[in-house]
Image (cartoon, rainbow, N blue to C red; front, side):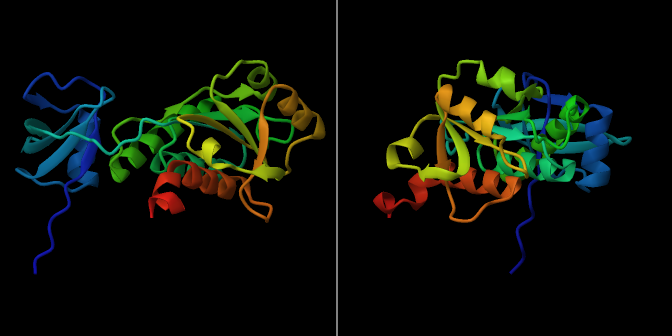
Length: 243
């Protein structure tokens, strides 16, 4: 049996008002030389207005022309708001956290400088992380892009009022209860490899952050992020109530 050909997804940064348009040179290059898509092949395009279309491409003198065929409705995305605050760690691991956060449905990611963060100036990495987030969205079928915020200090975060349910992941915390996991707006803070300073933990408590644990073992930062996001965004699927 012949295997069905994969239809690639591409993010574009403009409105899909016209039924036919020519791609910018960098997108044309990626379609032809990276994804190896051929003339007359189908392609899915989507943008930051959550518009998504099945298209057919034409390649003319190394330029790609896209013709919209059919609008695709995405009814699978959750309306849940999940904010991940993560202490800045090793750059390769931060890349991994960005990628997996997209796949696991995070709406907002905040790189945070804590006392034991490995780096104190990662502003120049934001564009790089945004590209990772876009490619992860293309791959996983997500329509709404994850928002990556500018890095900020721990102290500026603590002093800011956050309306969502707020949880600090820590091995000495209590277990999540059902109502907490079912919240429609939840914020999670994951610390650095060396853990939080005792003064930081005290500040979290004073400012209304609840300490929670998700494992009996002490988890690495990237493992804690992936585990917490999997639990929060897939609770309805894996809970005993839905089986």
